[in-house]
Amino acid sequence: MKNNIKEINYLIVILAVIGAYIGFLSIDNKTNHNSSDKINFLLKKIQKNYVDSVDINSLVESSIEQTLNKLDPHSTYLNSEQFSSSMELMQGSFEGIGVEFSIKNDSIVIMNVIPGGPSQKKGLISGDRIISVEGENVAGIGITNDKVIEKLRGKRGTIVEIGVKNNILDNVRYVSIKRDKIPLKSIDVSYEIAPKVGYIKINRFAETTHEEFRLELKKLINNFEINNLILDLRGNGGGYLDQATKILNEFFGNNELLVFTKGNSRKMREYRANFLGLYKFGGLCILIDEESASASEIIAGAVQDHERGFVVGRKSFGKGLVQEQMMLDDGSVLRLTVARYYTPLGRCIQKPYDYDSDIFKTGNLKNSVGNDSIRKFLTKNGKEVYDGGGIEPDKLIAKTKSELPPSILLLMSSIFYNDLAFNYVDSLRNYLSKVDFMNFEINEKDEKKYLKNIKTWMIKEMDDVYSTEKIIEDINKSSSVVIKRLNMLIVRQHWGLSEMQMFSNKDDEFISSSLYLLKINNITNGI
Image (cartoon, one colour):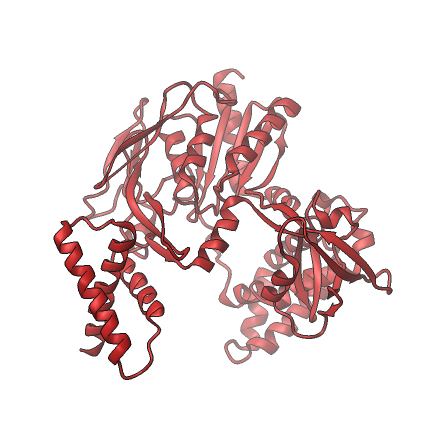
């Protein structure tokens, strides 16, 4: 009973607060005014008379979150700090010294130096240890990631002095670095993956994504004369709608419908292509998986509906809702779902809000029983496509039947496993600098040594959950995957994210299937 009363009070509070701030309640002025009066009265009485001291702001924020939970999973509230952090990611830049770091053995280790950034210009390299900032020791004191960010980031143009040493030179060198604007790229890698076949991987749709994409697309066209493109949207949870439509515009001719949106309080809005696209005729494959959502699904849906290319992979997440950002006076933000988006054929790919529904685990929309929201649509050439729960690929890449056992998943998510890669790189930086990353592989002797160390660690760390016999059986069955992923981590640690993606693409079924489809399509079209 007590909890029910508290929840009712929360809901009343937030409805009035949101109404007062952004005027989104669709009720008449008299009712809205009376609700505000009631809320103001309630808050004053609580603050003045409640048995304990009350943080009214905390009460209101909790109420906001509870109210939005009654709507849909994508209507969210962010306080000012959360909003600032999220916008940094979506705006595509931050201000700092331009390094990726990790804390190893209580030391700040530079993992990667951002090309063209302030740190690279001052000669900092991967493997350098930051031991002081502005004369203050930061090594061996239990410093946290948040504290490192707080000390190294700062306003553009300001200067920070750091003390640095590495494994080659014991002496400490002091470097003054002028902070600058550091780009956060939304494109992981772009390269010619096969003769005249371009590959671009986008990790999110931020403010700069289309600008980055168009630049990389131009390079592929001018430098390699590509006539086929693989656009990898796996693991891409979406972002800004306009960035998705601008990228789609590169693939379509004048006035073709790309997507449209509509909602109860929003008129229908169509997004159409113009004649300025760079890549309107070449072969095209879009890669998606179960984590591809929102803007990623807009691109896949339009390409599929117009039969502009192939969609390859696994059924996408199924997020077809559009959020609008509404600022509150204190710097916090309400992201409210205001519309649904629809593919050119009119498909809404939003699945039911119960994201754990068995219907959507099967991946078989056509045979789903008792779900009236699933409808069939026909493309211009008669291909059947469906709405109601994500984009089903034209070419399905099934998950491997032999899923990794839980013990191996625990290993791969452990600090120990990541440290194996770091320690390998840290002890062999000179050797690795002479190696072509695409041909890198742990030698057989090291492979046996690492597998032995891994078994020892797993038996020690997991003996309360798994028997020694079970652990040995799991590692023996999964040893090839364990070493393959360790190779990938080493490539990531030494050469970088782009190189790791290129390295992993060598044995990727999504890639090989796409290359085959593009080859067949070229033969059919006489390219």
